[in-house]
Image 1: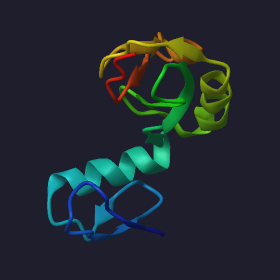
Image 2: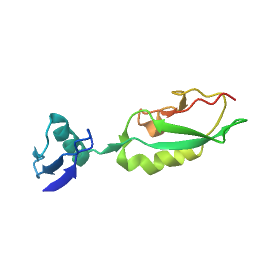
Image 3: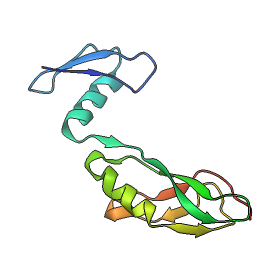
Image 4: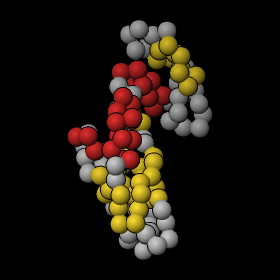
Length: 114
């Protein structure tokens, strides 16, 4: 039996999952889906920053557009660390396309004008 706390909504249901992936303790179907995904193929969003050539900013905050497999977090961070961009940058601009072949882009989360 594995115990998890669901993070899909503020309720924070205390979930129990057995060896057959039967979930109890969830107040909605999202809790069961979360628990099964967390135990079979966990994913996470990654947030970080990259260097930027700008007159006003030294770093540009970035994030994965979608969650990536949890086991790739450190490799994705290594790729992000290699990047330097030049202003101007707009929110949503793709900074790294298809990072590590995951199909997920790294995107800007702040506008930098110059």
